[in-house]
Amino acid sequence: MQAMGRLAGGVAHDFNNILVVILGYAELLLSKFKEKDTTRNQLERIVDAVNRAAALTKQILAFSRKQVIDLQVVSPNDIVSNTMSIVKTMLPEDVEIALNLSPEVSNIEADSHKIEQVLMNLVINARDAMPAGGRLFIKTNEMDIEETSARNLHLKNGRYAVISVCDTGIGIMDDVMPHIFEPFFTTKDKGKGTGLGLSVAYGIVRQHNGTIQVESMVGKGSEFHVYLPVTEKSKEKNISKPMQDKYDAFSGHERILVAEDNEAALIIISDTLTSLGYYVATAENGYEAVRLAEGAKEPFDMLVTDVIMPRMNGKELFERLSARYPSMKVLFISGYSDEIIYKSGVKDKNIALLEKPFDNQKLAKTVRQVLDANPL
Image 1: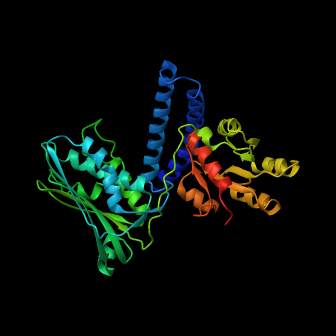
Image 2: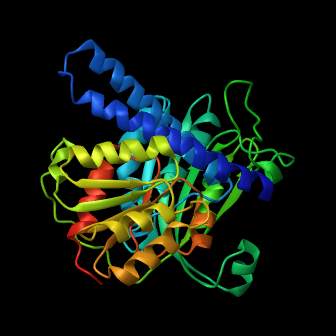
């Protein structure tokens, strides 16, 4: 599993660089065609395919527990509620769904999109366990895990929010139970399952310092309980602002230095930022970036740099430049796994990190946000 995780991280990096280029140029071309143009429709299909490929990469990283997660204070009840419209479309008419969401459940620190993915995987698993129909229950509650129970569940002592997905399906055989979270293990017919669903869910939950407990009885159904540590922090209030569809809503005039060792990714990032009005200088490694910065007539307002580069990584580059240009902002980008990013020394809640693959609007928006942010 460790070897597979390292392999997944390396493959994801190279694959995500390719996806950044395809997605970036497809979106640039999209803006040149009218809505009803046949070519625009074909480009939209390319964008859709890239997004599906990106989701597949994240699945591979999820089961090895090496994907990047974006932690925010969220309500478990909100996560369940937000997925209901999708869940209902996934269930056949002969499956009845019932919710029981406790109003007392506390907030958690989680990547809501990842936990929604866990919930969706558990719902799909429950649906497939009820080929003749049945009942699906989704519940939330909160409980205190004491030392003995915590040790059995491989958790720390404390309070946990619990999201439960229960079905009245066929249940899990005793000889199958020990293998259900193994990647690529499946009891489904060939072509009907990859064996990644539950392993992905388990990997995501463990990344959140939680666990999944399973109870099942053959012929009676199964219960999956997702334990996630609660937090006393409050959710930030979201102030809704009108968002323009075009990424050029985030244009600017600042001077940006881009360092990226993948030439194709470097070009599309440069093209995107240049089209927004920024002055952009590009470098294929850290040493070239230092040379450009030190030889420039005016200092750069911002550095956009890949995290992992040969000889001088992104953190080392920024430290060297910020010592000379203390007002310079920085945006790190990476297609590597969470583990490798941590080792590079740039994973911090106060550091802007953009995960590959990203679309042009996400790049434009993030660059603008970093430039406009007040210094800490």
